[in-house]
Amino acid sequence: MKIVEINGIKLEIDERTARTVESYKVGDRIKVLKKSYGSTYNVYTGVIAGFSEFKELPTIDIMFWNGSDFEFAPLNARTEGIEIAPHNELEIRLDKARAIDAMDRKIVKAKQDLDELEVKRTYFIERYAQAFEAKAPVDA
Image (cartoon, rainbow, N blue to C red; front, side, top):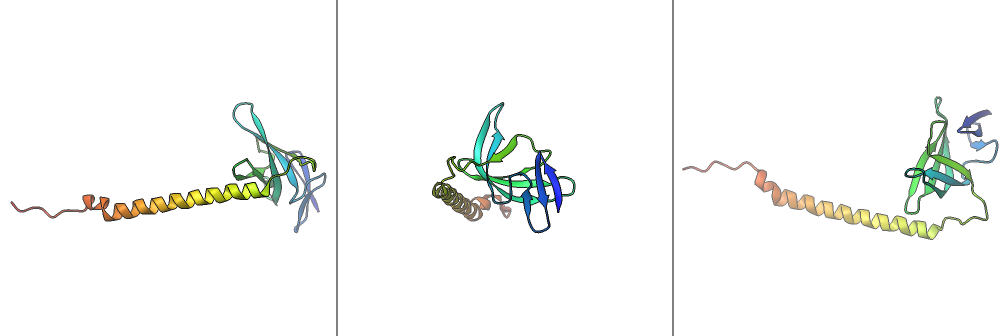
């Protein structure tokens, strides 16, 4: 076992698992405090997604719901603007159905954008690109 400290959080590491000596382990729900613009901070619901045991900068991998999408963020000794805290069981939890619905809407939008881009590409190949093709000189 090896103890690693990351941004004030002590982790006990073995080759198979990563868990904190104090209170965190992979899979734990957390609150994420993320700096926004200026001196504004927002709190999000998240989870400890993993641990990356880099030699130079051991990193806790966190994932959190920002209200419209999931974000992944590294947390290590050089991370600025992000802090984590334990998620209290009495606090509001992330609504799984709402999160999935939001992601489904983003998928539908992305597919629509892809379809539109494919139509534009086809139109360019069939019509617009003809204007750039070399024309044979006209005999006088």
